[in-house]
Structure formats: structure tokens, C-alpha cells
Length: 74
Image (cartoon, rainbow, N blue to C red; front, side, top):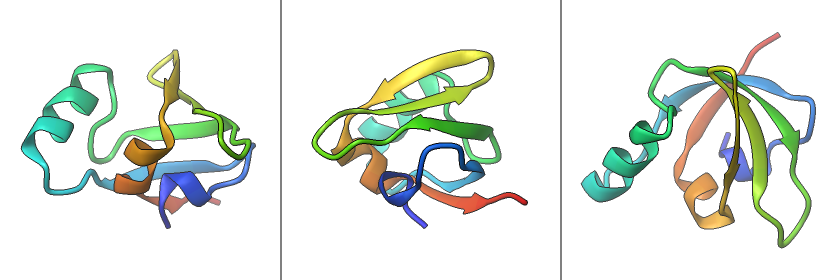
């Protein structure tokens, strides 16, 4: 499931970050990497997605979120 499709309160783990090297470099620099667990804090339409990852609250634009594949954790 893409990060952009997840509801607030969902806990998940990053499965893949897409194929664009520039994007992967940029997103890993702020703490998102394959295998990282995160929680979706807020996901309102037409607004950045807020996630909590590695003890940091991040705001990601919707285009970036559509490139991140994640697996929902129980």
C-alpha cells in the first residue's frame, strides 16, 4: 500500500522507496529507509502527510508519499 493511501493512526513498515536515485538519497537523509517503522499522524487531502519515524515528526508532500510502498503492521 502506498503511504499516500494510509489513514491517520496506521502503523506500518517501509517496503520500498521507488527507483529514482535522487528521491531515495533525499528521503533516506531525513530518516526514511527500507525496514523503518512509522506511524501516520495526519493524512488530509491536498495537504502534506505527517508521519512519526525514528522519534521525528516529518511532513512529506503527497508526490513523495505516492513513491513509498509500506506494509501495515498489526
